[in-house]
Length: 106
Image 1: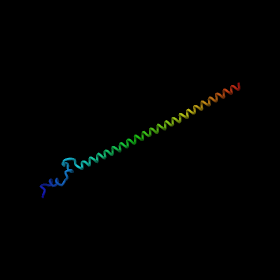
Image 2: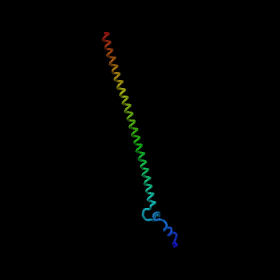
Image 3: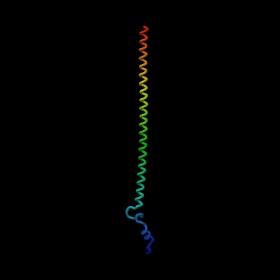
Image 4: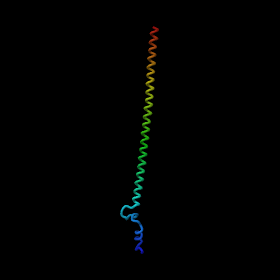
């Protein structure tokens, strides 16, 4: 059977799903949409993971800095309190010794 024109023979061999006039959603179009959606989802997941990782690192660094500052301030406070107590004890001992020496001499 000889086709009446070239267009008719081409139309009979091409799948309707591939052509734009196939009626309904084409398979190729669906695959492209699914691939784009998968790529977008993967990119969003990667972005979310990176943002969460950065936030966690910043929070951990802030916590470490706060802990270090608290420990350093605590150590300095303890040292200052000990030094003040030692100075008070030394001053009291010196005053008592001076009072005893003056009482014995006079």
